[in-house]
Image 1 (cartoon, chains in turn cyan, yellow):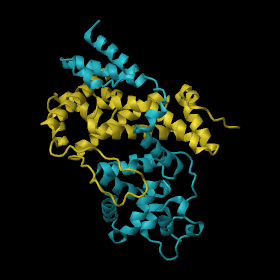
Image 2: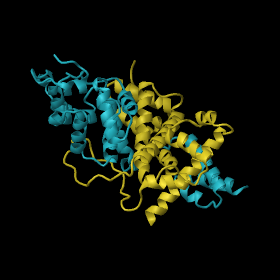
Image 3: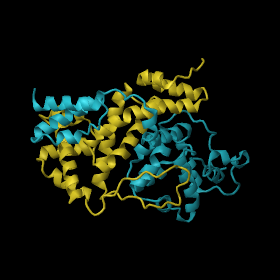
Image 4: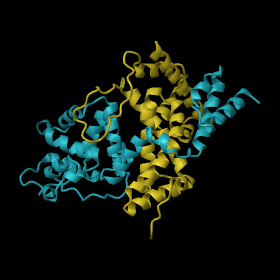
Length: 211
Length: 205
């Protein structure tokens, strides 16, 4: 049995026994880079094919899986695909508070004087309350430049979700204000757009021409 | 069609495709609580393996964050039918793409800064995710350049196409004479391992 074969067998045994199974600990035990690469590929292949681990409710409750399931729950219930799960993290990676991102986004869109409205729409995007289909490429390109993601990737993430379950957006600033709060707080009377408040920001985020 | 709620131990026995179908059916039946339980079993079941694979490919501080991305993207696309093939294979594809995206961002951006601790504008989205600080230690893009420079020109091209541009091993091998898919994979693995080691060394310095 070669060293690589033996190490792989040890690794698999530790993984199946529920141990740490840190692959790096095993890779460090191999001196030659060629062999290390081989072991890394073998471990990778094994992990890729390995079945799901059995559910353990007590471990689950303490795991980071909870946060992922929360995010998926929001994403699958909203109108913005995976944006609720991904946008906050992209913003976090860029090291930006939402207020800073909104300022930059408004500036990039040439609507710095309307950053409050941009903030409401962006919040709705993060919460999955804004129909992703209405958000223009201009907005996504500008947002992508700020958080380091491509327009295509953001568009795809916005599309990838279950059927919408919330009412279609009213396409207005009034919607944005409503969307900026939890759905349970939004009243039906607020769904109607405000007369006279329609502007280019609404168009950029809803794709509608106005009334 | 009537929906039947299943206990955890029965959900555990379902294969991925059936488990995903169960979650979808539970949502359609107006039982988000049961749908969530199914999602929990799917996410919990794969999170560990996704993280272990990522541990070999990206710096330690990015593993948890990227694992979240991988699972969200893979499961999200499984629900709208845009995933391809078996879920487990799809998870691997998404994982590889996420790693490519990570390095592309790193190559383009000097470093990832942690968020300030206090947030006043977090809405109701739950706790902020963030990547742990590597402040004062690593300018990642410089490390990437240094590690890249340890490879010959052809191998650098492979790394740029496969690791940074996200082309598949098949696509890269078709562009470069005499380069097999296995070679592409080995070069990429070698690069990531050297990069990880270098980042660890810089971080510990």
